[in-house]
Image (cartoon, rainbow, N blue to C red):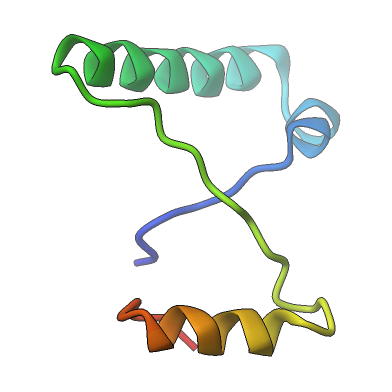
Length: 71
């Protein structure tokens, strides 16, 4: 299983029912609040679609800095 998953907000709205969207948004908010209570900063990510022409270069840079990338 992947460590992370990414959902584009517009696709979440387009392809799921309101209940599903609200459940995902509630889970994200609970995670944010829980991290805040523990004194952790909010998570902030840079997402790169693997089909972009520069993705391999970004992956190589991340590997050079010790990141384990699932190819």
